[in-house]
Image (cartoon, rainbow, N blue to C red; front, side, top):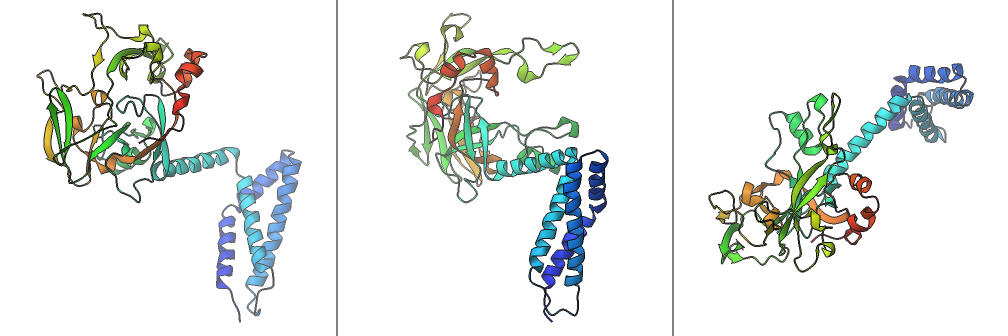
Length: 397
C-alpha cells in the first residue's frame, strides 16, 4: 500500500497549529457580524466553512487505511488548507497585535541587517578629513570581513574601545554589541559610539612613530610610510551652533540634550589659499572663526606638527617600536591633528570592528545628527550651502 507519511505529517502539523488559534479566530469572525461589518464577516465566514469542509475531506482521505494511493489533487488541497488557515489566523488578529508583530519582525530584520549586511553611519567628527567630513552619511559594509581579512589602508568602522562593552552581564554585552541603542526602562545600556579610522598596521607588524625635523613620520616594519591619504592642510578653530531650543527645561520637564542649543568649538580643515566663502570642504563665514582671547587671531593647527599628550611636552606621535599582537590593529585618523586613535588608546581589538566604510550616501555640512535641524534654521541656504551635492555616492579609498 502506497502511503506518503510526509504528507500526513504536514497535514497534522497544519491542523494542530491552527487548533491553537481556532477559538480566537471563530470569535473574531462572530464579532464582525455583531458589529455590523458585513463584508468582513461574509468573506471570512466563507473561508472558515471552506477550510472546515476541506479538513474533513482530507481526514477521510489521508487516514483511509484501505486506500492504495491518494486521489489526484490531494497535495494541492493540503496546500489550499494551509493558505486558508494562514489568512484566517493573520486577518483575525487585533490591530494592536498585528502592529506589535510587525514591529518585532522589523526590529529583528534591522538587527540582522545591521550586523550581517550593512549599516548607515553619521560622521560626527573630522578625524578622517578630508576623505570623510563631518556630516557625511557613510555606508558601512558589514559583510566585508566575513569572507576576507582586514587589510592595511582600509577605512574601518568600529566601536570606540575606550567605552568598551559591559561584560559583567551577558545580556548587556550582547545588547551593546549587536543592538546598540539604550532602553533605560529595561536597564539596557547603549553601545559605544561608532568611529572610523584607517588601518595602519596588522597583527605581526612593527609600528613606530617619530618626529623628524619637527614633522611627524610613521615607520612600518622599519620603513618610512608614504601616506598620500593623510590631511596636509591646517585645521582652523570655528564656532558652530548645535540644537534648536535656547532653554534647558519647560517647567518641570527637561529638554532632551539633542534639542538643547549650544555653541561648540570645532577644528575643520582649512585651505589658506582660498577665502572663507570659497573653502572646498566646509561652509565658513568670517564671524564663524574663533579668535584667540589674547592674540585676537585665528587658531591654526598645522599638519604634521607633533601633538602634545600633556603639558609636560610628551608627544603622542613618538612611540614604539612595538609589535602588533594577534587579532589587534593599529588605527589612525587621516587628519592626524584632529584624531584620537591608537596613539592614545593603543591597539584596536578585532571584536570592536563593524565593517569597512565603502562610500558616502549623502553629505550635509552640519554638526547636527538630524540635518532637519539645519534645514529649519537655514531653509534657503541649506540646499545650496549646506548640502554637499558633489559628495553623494562618493567611493571611499
